[in-house]
Image 1 (cartoon, rainbow, N blue to C red):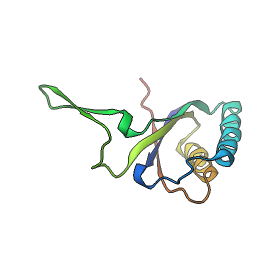
Image 2: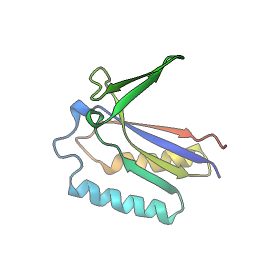
Image 3: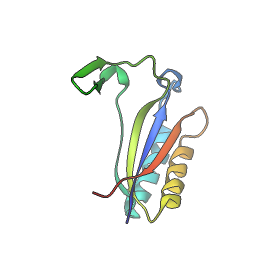
Image 4: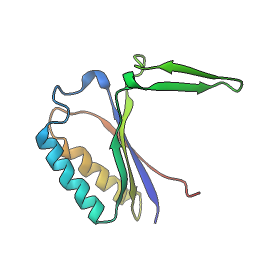
Length: 118
């Protein structure tokens, strides 16, 4: 069965003051539990802010490193999930449910892509 990665893209400068509050976390926990029991969820996590990370670039000759935050970037990856689904439509349905768990006050994008079998 194919695996899919959903990447949550956020604008770190426009996050709700209470990111995510206890009600959102409770709804998220229930959904993630349901996904795990259904055999869909393989791994998921949020990522630390870009201020705590680094961006590395290879130019064909050397590696350069830029410490965060990355102020020139509007959206960054804020979290991910790796799911095992029968097809892209099923992966999109689970990702849609995850987005809706957040409710009002949130605005972000989720990119869903199949992982190349290797």
